[in-house]
Image (cartoon, rainbow, N blue to C red):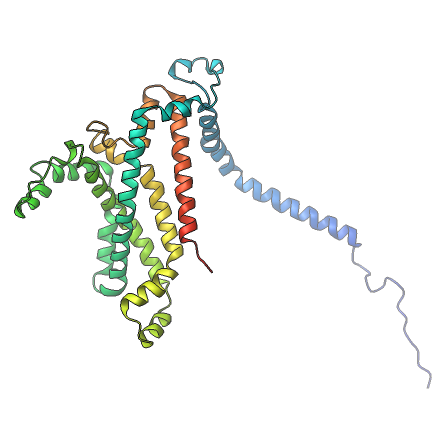
Length: 319
């Protein structure tokens, strides 16, 4: 029986499809249209960021290499380029060096204290406190959203020579100092205030991290005989590294830039004992020394970057 074989002409299989080169061009055109659409949506933010953020950042960086002062505002193009002279002048300035030491003291004491207390509170809320947990969260977070002016009024009352803190110390037979007018105790008083204000934010971050630790791993360790401290140090803390990193970096940025506490409470006194780098920079702008103030702000930026880098190296995940 004879059979017939249908032989399709060459090219019939791809009939109706455009050539490969045309498909590539169409794909490229579609990607360009998508990219253009994305940039059009992003354009308002890019313009706002460029005008109000990137432009001032670049301008202040360039200004730090000039002798620009308030006298040069009317003719800014006549400002002289002085290279690194402003940075050298900073480190010859005893007041700036004193503000650096004050800031280092504030950071070295405030960050560990806030971190330890926030972690302890987060562990207590996560494990030990079941009733009224939401009330505790709100209570500890309230100082974060409270106006610094209202906080200053309350803390000024607490830290007065006859204020609440000294009254409590008097009950224990301790004569409290004049906290805000003492070169010895003014900085510890501001550290207490800063720890109280920032405790809630860090506690919420740590609480979120603790709730992400798998419970079955902790239960397995308990079955194997690990006590509570061993479970915390061997399991919880290592798994909490990313959360610790986030919390401490955010806290470090805020503490290195501390300004509101001395500005509202002590005006940098007494005798510059609470003068911070941010407050020094603010004063230089007020004095019309824009070049020097810009240099001080970039010294602070480098300090923040270096501390953040150290924290990333110490706390990054070892997976």
